[in-house]
Image (cartoon, rainbow, N blue to C red):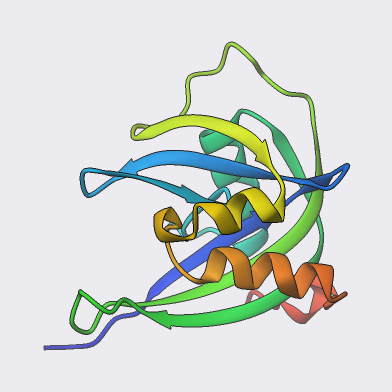
Amino acid sequence: MVWKPHATVAAIIEKQGKFLIVEEKSEGKIVYNQPAGHLDPNETLVDAVIRETSEETAWQFEPEYIIGIYQWKHPQKNNCTFSRVAFYGECHSHQTEQPLDEGIIRAIWMTREELVEKESQLRSPMVLRCIDDYLAGNQYPLDILISL
């Protein structure tokens, strides 16, 4: 069997101390995550985070910089590893009539403290880690991503 990590992206969006979070149903449970998802074929990482944010929240996202690159192995799924590139950016043009991706319950704004209270319902430990790295000031330029 060939090991294949999941290539994913996530959007960290903060307004007035609250973060844009997706409440979704995953494996029969309600979980919380940043707008995030998998890289599609022939798509850049920047294009993927713009698309995923729109599909999951109906907000248009403009990435400004990278917060970090993360690797996480799911503890209950043998050999299931996620590589995540987390982007910070601003959002605009909320399309309130746009349907959200299947499984998405709603997009909500939550403080870090509210997320800590729901820690057992976070999709992965990357949710808080990305926020904490953003709050710590981690910033890497988008031009470190090179598509050939």
